[in-house]
Image 1 (spheres, helix red, strand yellow):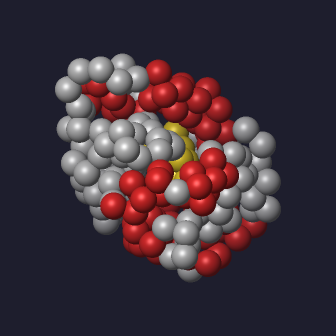
Image 2: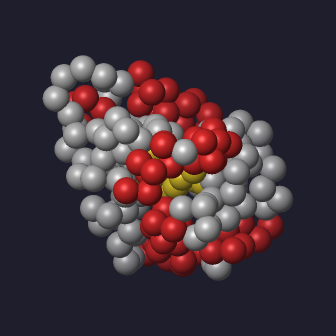
Image 3: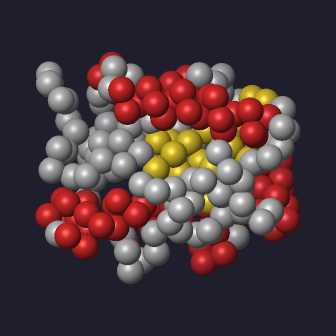
Length: 196
């Protein structure tokens, strides 16, 4: 990667976590954060193998034993939908960017990266139609414009771009209440076996 950027290239890139191939609930975000643990994983065979398994789209969301910081992060954003042990196989996170950074400010570079374009194009071609038909729930919780969605809108049965904080938490209001109710019901009834 050339040019000025704040991406940490000592980390292994991966733009999603959780069972992306089968999860009934997909959360859309911007890019992975950065912890020292991410660098440590890149330096060990065990860490590299774990990231490779994550890239298959079949792994559960990480628990505290695999990646404590990632577990704490996703747990705070999904607590309204249920218990974290129950959600690990039912929720996945897809991010536009695959590269880690502590403070994300590389918006122009982000969309120039082929990996970022793949994330957005796949979401638009596969996930959005599935959500519009009600096959999955897709929640855009960060940078809706970069995903190609206007904020504070619902599309079809289950594609949402609610109003959110900069950290990706839904703001209180009728759409948040509607999303929580729908997601809980959907997660309970869904076998979690959707094939992209």
